[in-house]
Image (tube, rainbow, N blue to C red; front, side, top):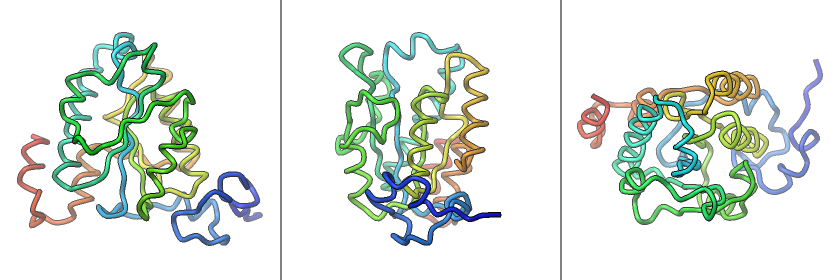
Amino acid sequence: MFTYFLDELIPYYVSDFFPMNKTKNMTIEHVKAFFPPEINTTVILFIDMQEKFLGAMPENIQNTIARQKIVLEAAKLLKVPVVITEQYPQGLGYTLPEIKAVFDPNWPIIEKSTFSCMGAPEVRMELKKQNFSSVVLLGIENHVCVLQTGMDLLAKGFQTILLKDAVNSRKTVDLETGFETAKAAGVHMMTVESLLFMLMKDSRHPAFRDISKLIR
């Protein structure tokens, strides 16, 4: 079996930056290997939860929104950075007000035209601000913007985590196919609760009680 290095496979991405350990000896297998995310090296990417998009979503979108709110509230408690994107907001509307009400005022909201968040220079700049190694994805639609973002993050060398209960698509087949494609590429599947407890690691964590109340 041949081992291909990322700088040979995808030179454009690797030449920009390689956050995990900035080595040319990082293989595809290293990117796919799972390591527990840490609070101080994790960032959350909240993708395109906009008014006109949401009008086309299935009824269970309310369950998705409820799980997303838990992540956002927990991010404030854990001090995990969040980056928010909006796809062509002039035409598709802005983030749903009930979700935006949960945002920390310091979280950047970035407008984009590309389906992948990584096509927006401002997003790439936010990811360069700290030594992030894990990026957590939630939002819509799972088979388009979320999936393409995940693929590009992998190419950049980030461990990429998709929260299955905090994403959605208009059609079930697209939602499920998005999961399958992302997993095959090396994106790790988790749930909201699993991620939060993995970040805290210990019931003695200062935020444990408050986050436990959010999850109940």
